[in-house]
Image (cartoon, rainbow, N blue to C red; front, top):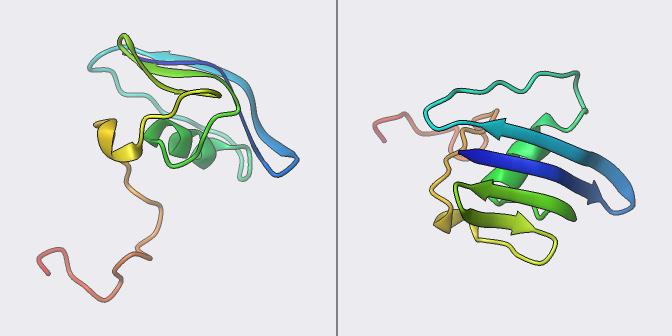
Length: 96
């Protein structure tokens, strides 16, 4: 189970996420919808561990992944993320 409780994130002094909470059960698929700039990608980056959280907690099962005092690195989370663009290797095919 993915549990997000009261998560907050900001860039410099600009708040992006404020007290975001969500629960997603094992085997469930979730969808985050909202207008451009509302924090969807930032929330996904926090879940994946690419961004810190400044308040609240992100957990999977009984494991704490992120809080203001604790951060499990992305490579230890067993969470994948597909980016919105192909900027990493635009010159390669899938096979390459």
